[in-house]
Length: 376
Image 1 (cartoon, helix red, strand yellow):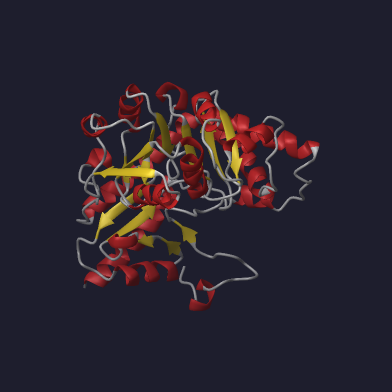
Image 2 (cartoon, one colour):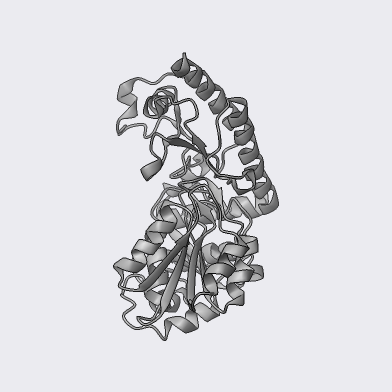
């Protein structure tokens, strides 16, 4: 399929006409789009309360937790800021482990909120190791630690299963940004003792943007009551109070929450969580095999660091990445250039949400032809 250039602009009648293989927002399945279009009741009605409860209880199952789960009318960045505002006292230090652009963003949020913010990181393409955590945390006391599970800019998955226990041994509250891995990669919140595990829904949940979610531990709830000047919109205590009656303090994106319930039902009752996680594992493996066959170097320094939800590849052939992305869009598929300082040095393929192996294969075949054309 080759699209006319006019179809690559805003299409009022048809909407987006390309198949998205981006790191988010991702392709939304037709069954979810149909549910998004259904009439809504108000957010102060019994039907909404029932839907809200279904959403939060479903999230508990996806995250393997008994902790409360909250719904936010924002992107995941809003919850990142909420962690800083709610959990860090003015005289405390908050530690941000960074392996890329979004780790840096969390640190910048801490700085912007006037918190004593410390950033420790490794070379982009690397992952945090337990040894590095020990080295850093022996230096000082950090009541709150923030870290990415999956760094969307570099395509690196931090081995959070190894890192969380080490951080918790130091007595810190642990906040994990799982934006591009939650619902695609298994995260056992209670087993790892994660205090806040957050994400937005436009990635592995395969929903339109506008809603973000998190689990929150009792330890984090207790700490919130000790922190002053938490703000209003992202105040955990206000959100938790409303959550007790299956509500939000302000008007939420009701269609997205309906869509979330649809997706949770699908994950839990139809596909099954373990099969879903395995599908994402296979999508990641297949993309890395393709990159190897194309003589493209993965950006992560070690293969064990490679994400199963988003792959970042180096521009090994020194081709025009912008032209490659544009040409692929004209042929019906969407991937993206590198993020921030990695623009034109890398490109990224998102393989998350409801993407199947066959759909990935079809896109990669077209992308292969384009790369061959640009190299010739």
